[in-house]
Every structure is written in structure tokens, then in C-alpha cells.
Length: 157
Image 1 (cartoon, helix red, strand yellow):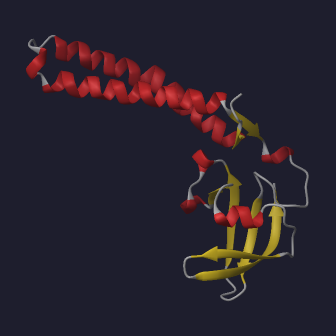
Image 2 (cartoon, helix red, strand yellow):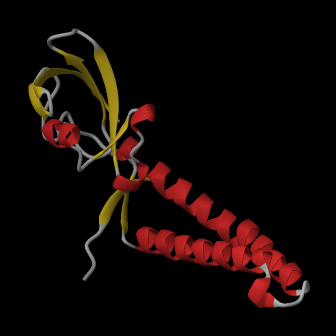
Image 3 (cartoon, one colour):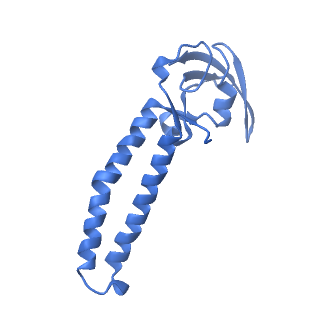
């Protein structure tokens, strides 16, 4: 039995949109490029043909990867969560005890993580330190430069 991987509803929608684009836009475009390149004659020295075949291989590999991830996903809608603790899907506002700077993170699936957008994987050290905690709790995160101390000031879903 394959272990299910948590993913937010938004993450699932994003992967489904990419899958649809790969199948309905990219796949036909690549097939056409292969057909046009094939018409140019000798395939052994046809760089366009080899490039199109490489694109096709990459595209089909990505389609398989997305289909696998979607089939193994346990989709969680943060809007449906009712908890006063930090769990998968939570948006957490923390304050750095030393610098007094606030940061907001949403805890998401591995495929969805994007630090620039404040989305961290549930497997990251920060998320692991936050999960299970409540508003007002102090959290210590081990960082390369030493331990960092944070306080949870808001949890929302």
C-alpha cells in the first residue's frame, strides 16, 4: 500500500491545471513538431527531430510524475480545519524573539513549498517545530547559525 502524501486543495488544483496543460497544449504541440521535423528527411542528422523527441520524453515523464503525485495525495482543505493547534494547512504568524520581526508561513505539501510566497513544506524544520503548538507558544528552531526562538502570535486556516 502506497503511503498518502498530504497536499492542500490549492496544490491539487495547481497540479491538475499543469497536467491538463501538458496533455492538451504541450503534447499536441510536440507531436506536431516531431511530424514537421520528420518531414525534413534524414532523422539521424535532424537536430529539430531529436530536440522534439527529447521534449516529448520530458513532457511524458512530467505527466506520469503528476499523475502519480495526484493518485498518492491526501487532499486537505485548510478552510475545513477547526483547530487551535498548528496542523497541516495552517497559516501561522510568528515573531522572532530576538529581532521582533514577524513572518507568516502556510504549512503545505512538499510539492507546494515556495519560501518566497511564505509556503513551507510540512517536512521543513520550521514546520516540524510549529506543528502541534498553540498560539502564544514559544518555538525553538535549530538553524545552521544556532537556535532561533519564535513565538506563535496567530494561527488561521
